[in-house]
Length: 296
Image: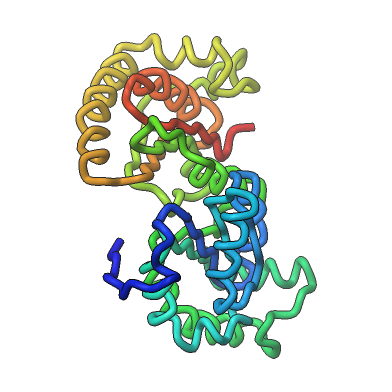
């Protein structure tokens, strides 16, 4: 993130201890869900606050309530911000620790969501044309985003859990937040990951009648998956790899690392392996979150 030098004045005497999370993105992509998740993560949240009032809000909540984490929702209706986004972002970044989270989704999925909720698009008119227009207008924010989340394959519950895992108040003694995500390839590959491992080569409990109706967090499933030599060898190799990589990511200054483990359906092998990995890497100086996206 680029920190721009600023002139010394009354506004910039305030140390950059305030964290400002700007949550934006396409209409229907989950901004309201993300804001609620940020609120669950100890952020003071405001939706569609005029940009000119952001600094005043941060100063007020900081002085009166000692709040250091503020999340602001901005969408297509915030014309003041969008008309001069680059300059306003530079100004905010000169005074605060700013991160922009942009929510995106496939056009077909957005259209379906609008039809299901029977809500009109904020720009009105034909939904598909409005989405295309909104994509163009918000491109400046997407290009400036620190993190882009494609919500196409996420339910509201899954998105909320992901946002909470990413932005909950991080342990001050930890250098990196690591999210371990299990998923099924049949439901689509997650779009917001840093590392992906395909473990469909491991023995599949789905074909064992006594294990089929269980999931990967069950001890019997875990024992079946992990007892095989290929599983034991894989566990050793991935532990060695992550023990090597995590300190390097920390040294690089990364704040978040998302590791996805995928099997066919996301119910047996990938949850088992994620739980196994979580136990192996806890010794690192990390804040660890586990998400089972497709586990029943």
